[in-house]
Structures are given as structure tokens and as C-alpha cells.
Length: 174
Image (cartoon, rainbow, N blue to C red; front, side, top):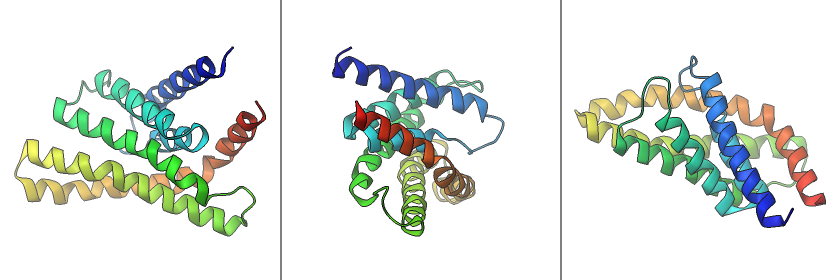
């Protein structure tokens, strides 16, 4: 299998993983491993694969959500936000070495989790408030949902990054 075909298969697999894990966690509002998956794709394979995983995975979730599809402007903001998490993974890669002390690696993961949450919820909250009005009360009300997601990501990123490390080591051996 050529390198390009293998990368396309991995993008499809990680995109499907976002969709499946979003289903699994749909009973827990705003708790989702999709942020880590998109971030990881960018971290492991680079900017464009990370962006593709975030965009395709979120498109699947917003289109085939058990609660119904998102309104088009909100779906667009969600897709852009999660794609940006994939880009963030690539941008953070030089900052995180697996040889770093555990404390530095943990601080990096907390920063990455907070950054992914912010980069996703900023456009989503603004578009949601703009579409559903009144703007300021709706935007302020969305801070609680972003806070829940932030706490979840602060737990998920350090907890599951070991798997990303193993995948990264395996991919570099190919």
C-alpha cells in the first residue's frame, strides 16, 4: 500500500472514530473525545490530515446526529472549529517531545486541551448567538457549555495521549 493511500485510510478511520465516539458520548452533553482525535491527527500526520479529520468527522456528526442535523451556519462553525483543532495539533507538535519530563508534557496537554476547546467554542458560540438571538445573553449562556467541555478536555487529553504516543511511534517506524 502506498504512503498516500495509507494516509487516506487513516484520515477516514479517524473521521469515523470522531463520529462513533460522538455517538457513544451523546448522553453526556459537551463531553467528547473528538477534540483529541482531530488534534492527534494533526499531531501525528500534519496540518492537512488533521484539518481533514476534524472537518469530515464533524460533518458526519452534525449531519447524522441522533438529535437531528445542526442548522447550516452552526454546522459550518462546528466543522471549522474542529478542523482548527487538527491544525492546532500540527502547530503544537514541535512543542511536545516524548522525551520531556512528565510535568512538562502534562502542562503541554492541558494547554492543548484548553486551546482546542477555545478554538472550537469561539466560532460555534458566536454563530449560535447570532442565529438564535438575543446575542449577548445567548453568548454568555454558552460559556457554561464551553466550561463543561473544557473540564472534560482537561481530563481526556492527558488521560488518552498515551495512545497517541504509541500511534506516533508506530507511524514513524513505517
